[in-house]
Image (cartoon, rainbow, N blue to C red; front, side):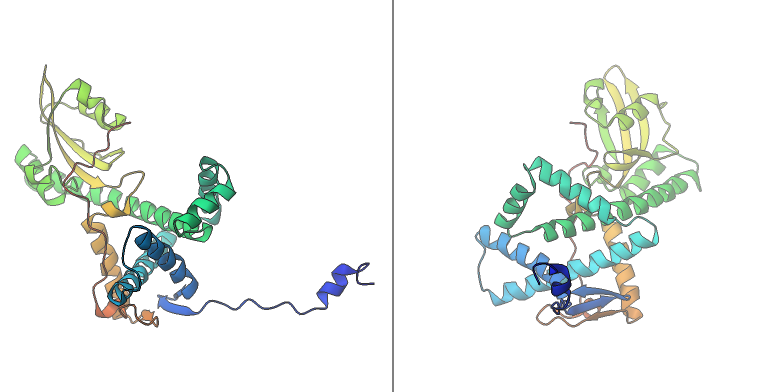
Length: 307
C-alpha cells in the first residue's frame, strides 16, 4: 500500500528538524552564526596551508579567528548601512553572479570543484559576492557625498586658485601617488590621455586653463575633481582630487576615511551596548579592542586607465 500511496506514507514519518546554527555574535539586532564564521574561517585556513603556512599554530589560530570575526562584524555593519539606503545586494543579484562565475568556469560542477580545491564552496562564494556588492555600493554612496563636500570647500571661502586646489588635494585626495604634490599628474600627452577613462579624458580636453570641474567626474577610479593648469602642443597639465570608488571595487584599497566611518559606527554601537560576542578564542568583543582593516594600496595612482 505504501508503494501506491507513497506521498501519504512518507508524510506520516517525522522529518528530522534542522538544528539552527549557534549564534556567536549580535550586532544591533542582527546575528552572526557559527556556520557563517566557519565558512570564512575554513576557507582562509585552507588558503594559508596551501600557501605553506604553519598548521596547528595556537597564536595564529587565535589571530585568524579574531580577524574572521572582525570581518563578519564589519560586513554586518556595512550590510545594515546598505540596507538602510536601499543598496543591499539581493539574492537574485548574488545568484546571477554565481551563475556568471559558473559559466566562465565551464559549469557549476567545475566551479564547485575549483572552489573546493581552494578550501571554498558555493556558500563561501555567495558570502563573498554579497559582502563585496554591499561594500562597493555603500562606499560609492559615501564617496559621492564626500566629493560633493570637497567641491563645496573649493567653492566657498577664499576665491579659487591653484594654491587652494593644491592644498585641498593634499588633504583629501585618495590618490596616494599624487596627493603629496597637490594632485599633480604632470603633463599628459594626447596619447597618454587615451589610456585614461573616457570620462576623465573628455573632461580634461574640455577644460579651460585655470579652471576646474565644479561637478565631480565619475570615472573608473571613483569621483574625480580635475583642474587644468597648462595646455600646449606637448599636452595637458592636470591636477586632480580623487575620491576613491573604483569599479570593480577592491576591499584592499578601502580608503582610510571609509574605514574610519565604519569604525565610528561600530564605536557608536559599542557605546549603545549593541555588539555582543560569545565566540571563544577570537579576541573577544571589538568594543574592547581595535578591529583590523586592510590598509589602502601602496603609493600608486588609482585613476584606472582603460584596458
